[in-house]
Image 1: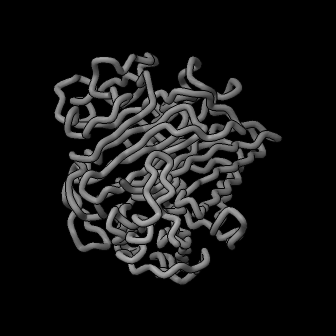
Image 2: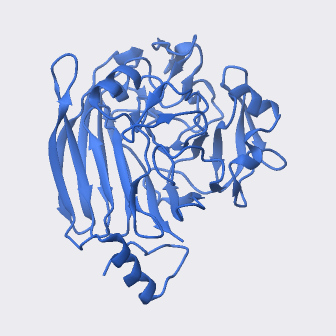
Length: 388
């Protein structure tokens, strides 16, 4: 009997569960991990694709290039499987075009923005590579999402199927100090949860803020606008930003703003608001200050939920990080297409990026992202799938 309907929020009868299995046509199977070649980069280096599956017909494919989540296949309310993650159809698409949208990639060393590409750490000024005007965005032009990661381990254990990827970023990479060794473990559990755990160590003081940049459309990749998807985010405050998307330092209340998702509401309800903070970003592109504790080793708490009324798919986001960038694919203008062969356009997906706050190295009031030798950066995020 399929376990896909183990939703945290909805309980279905046993007869409905059996019916969903019959409709899906997916035979029960043990969790698996399968690795295969997935083409090569322009420099000749080969890229691997690692596919994780569970007993419920959920499938996740991760690439060694950029540690990219290429595909996430989950059944809808009728048991029909569908990919809900945007991406490119082949490795050439990722290598040529992904420096802008960052489809499915790991963001690092520092996710989001560093103003003027500089910061002071322990009395010394560092200059990082600018790739958004004068600012450094998502680690710079040749950051973690452009690197070839190595497969450190993979397999199936009591928690499900997993793969661990490793990247060593040398001292001075994109201007950041210290040699940083990063591990990210992707795990697909029997409870239909995709989890990411980031662990990083350094040989010299540095700054670290790792995240993932997945674009989700729960009605299916290439299916069009997400205006009708219903979102709830457990955040009482958001970070106000200037005209360059740099936080002003103010933690503003979400009350009375388009960023108030404390109660479920559709994306469309606030997407075309004339609120100045929306106009500056041409849509949702804001770091929300998540409710709850965020310290190394803290258990993850549910911070967001999104429901698609067409497919019935539901996704819950959990993390032990303090913030989350919420983005409505504002800069996807019809120049990319995905595995479905359909063109992506503005508003065709939502990104939920758990992270520390943007420009943290230059904002003393924000939680610190400094990492010192002997310390371990240990944070994660999870995406739990179900349907109603």
